Image (cartoon, rainbow, N blue to C red; front, top):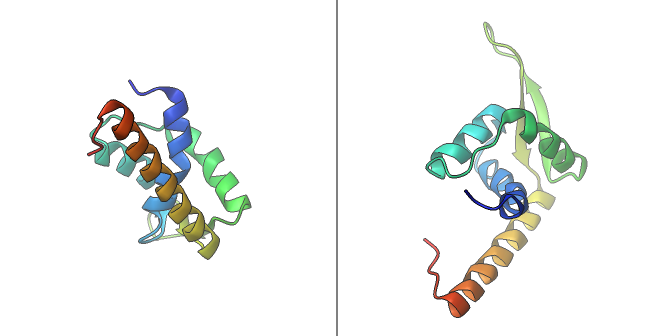
Length: 110
């Protein structure tokens, strides 16, 4: 099990990265994190929504309600220009962190 602090520190970047290509709703974001991490990272949708709201309040993502016939309405989130800048910075920070780990502990990130 990954340390909760590492998980907490990476969640923002994971969300921003998943809405980079196209708008997604909270349940889809949670499922993609779980699937793409082979189950190592798991987030309950209920714990993801407060972070989505904070990211929206910081104007890193923009949400809008979408209603489709026969389905309940869902809030889809997309990356803003400010969010793209923060995502780029966070990716560099994590790349630097992994490089430092590798230099010290000979850990090659996959």
